[in-house]
Length: 444
Image (cartoon, rainbow, N blue to C red; front, side, top):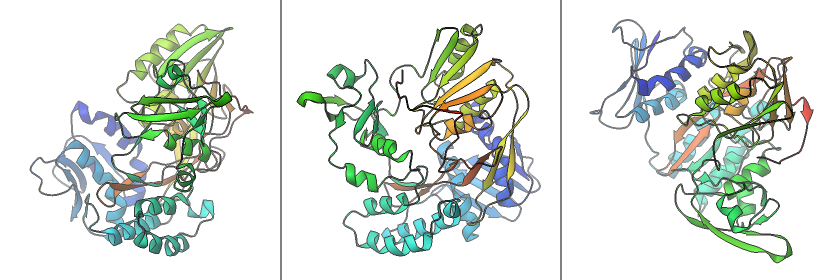
């Protein structure tokens, strides 16, 4: 089958992602698939197209040998890829539309998570029992969104969660529960006098703890991240308490981005140091890495700091990983969730990048907030002779989540895969293991 993806530079990044995810689609549809950019007009094919005159929500539909993903915009058409499991589950056309009422939203959570989520057995969870307990509570609640969030948080998966939309985004700080662990020098809070070790004013901390799901070692930091989040680009007042009765407030608008440059580098004692704060597409990260690797080429070793890097663009993360491969490498394997069953393991192979690469030793610094796309970067590097991972195990999120609409202003993200390293260690819930433990959180 041909998967026909639109031509044009604006579609190239997602074409790369789709090309990497073809084994997933092949497992779901039980057929071989090739990605093409021009429709032959004949034979079995999945055509993705933008139709400004399309009437109604984006749709994934099938007519005999022809599958179509249709939306009025690029983003609407892309949303249909999150409808695949709905389409497979129901056997009917699936549209990106909101639930009609709370009962339908609850049914969507029950059915979509039950059909898609890959880690019930891994986590020892009984989804039917959780649904029997929480569904009536949601329908009777004064704040059903809060109860839905608590319900899905029982899965302990940061990728699988109910969100308000548009989603809140974080300030450029980090906290473990209510204790600040990172306040970058020069940031708004820093200039106001706030320092690591101070305590956030967070009257909803207990409630947020119940409504946040994550692997156990990541959970306190994800709670802290949510306490430090708000509406994007909307100023709000924040407050923290320090030693000796210090009480500081500051006004800041969350942007969802780290403070300062996304990539920084320096050298010390013959070792090159690179800090990569987040995988943001179109932000010049590849060019910055080219420059960093060129300037540090004569160093004996490179230390790459991914602590606090919660992920982002997975295509960029994987392309960066390939800069550190010396040969074609078995990275690990992946199992896809299809109808509450897991596919057979599919090997993942990495090849050295064509552009600027690092040929020496590499040390990667990680912690519990090294997550998602950062774990895609780590997978396959950890365990190689020239690579050492130091710090704490990563957050433990294989992810590749799909997004399903619930009520207007609500959505749910649901993990769809389990990823394993080359030794068969499952990343989900445990993280990528380290070679040497460290608890230092002195992030630059």
